[in-house]
Amino acid sequence: MENRKLGSTGPIVSTIGLGCMGMSDFYGPADRSESIATIHAALDAGITLLDTGDFYGMGHNEMLIREALSGRNRDNLQISVKFGGLRDPAMGFIGIDCRPAAVKNFLAYSLQRLGVETIDIYRPARLDPSVPIEETVGAIADMVKAGYVKHIGLSEVGSDTIRRAHRVHPIIDLQIEYSLIARGIENGILNTCRELGIGITAYGVLSRGLISGHWSKDRSAARDFRLVSPRFQGSNLDANLALVESLRAIAGEIGATPAQVAIAWVAAQGSDIVPLVGARRRDRLAEALGALAVKLTPAHLAALAKAFPPDAAAGTRYAAEQMAHLDSEKR
Image (cartoon, rainbow, N blue to C red; front, side, top):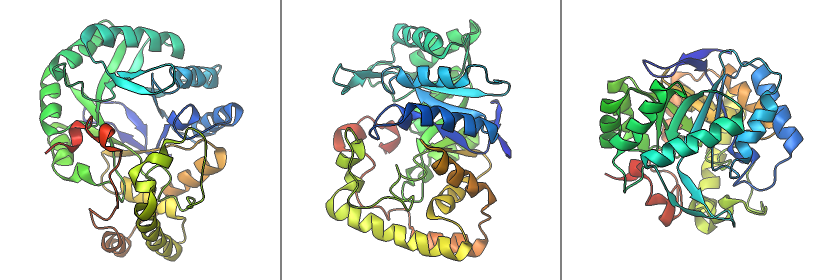
C-alpha cells in the first residue's frame, strides 16, 4: 500500500481509505460479520484511514468500528468522524447542529462509542447556516487543545467557508464528493484547498455504485436512499448507465474493471487526493484495491475526458432538499 500525506499539516494515510457508512445505513441491509471481516481485510491490506459519521445508523457505525478494531493494532490508524447530522426515531434527517455546545456533546458520545481517547480527524458533516463556521471550528480547536481531537477537517463546503475556517485553525482536509460524474470541486474549491495546503478525501468515487459496473435497473432494497436519488431515476438512470458502458469499454482496453478505472481516475487527479471506497464486502474491497495497480496513461486519461465531460451526469447529486444543505454547491 502506498501512502499520501493528508494536507500540509496532516498525517500520512493510505492512498485509499475505507468509508464505513454503508455498513450501517443508507444502502439497505448489511451483514455485520461481513462488515467486520471487510474492515479486517482493509487493515490487513494496509488501509490506515477509516471514515465514519456519528449519525450513521445513529451510532451503530462507530460501535461497529470499535468491535472490528478490538484486539487489532491501531498504530498509524486514522479514524475520521463527521458530526452534526440530526435524526429522528424513524431514521429521517431533521437538520444540522454545529453549535459549540453541540460539538462537544457529539464528540463526547463518539469517544465513548469508538472506545478511544482521541478522535484523529473531526469534522462537521455540513455547514450549519445558523452558526458561523468560525464558532464551530473554534469549538473543535478547543477540543484539540484539550487532547480530545488531533486534526480538524471539513465536509462539503465552498471556498469562502474553507478560508474562514482555516483562519481559525489549520484544516487538514476537505471531504467532498469527487468522481468521473461529480466534478463540482473543480470549479474553484480544489484550487482553494491546494493554495491553503488542504488535502482532499474524496467520497462517492463510484457515485454510490452507479458507475461501478455492477448497478442495474432492476436493483431494489429496503431503506436504500439510491432508489429516490435523482441520478438513479427514470431517464436519468438510462443516461448514466450509458456513460458506464463507455467506461466499461475503456476499462476493457486497460484490462481492469469499471470500478477500478473510476477509482484510479480520482487518485490520478493529484497526490493530495485520497479516494474513499465504500466497500461493504470483502470481494468489493478486493476489487477496489485492484485500482492501485491501474496505471492510467495520457491516452487513457484523454479517452476518459472525452467520455466524461464535467457535466456528463444526468440529475443532481442529491434530492433538492439535500442539495440545499451543500455549501459546496453554492456559487
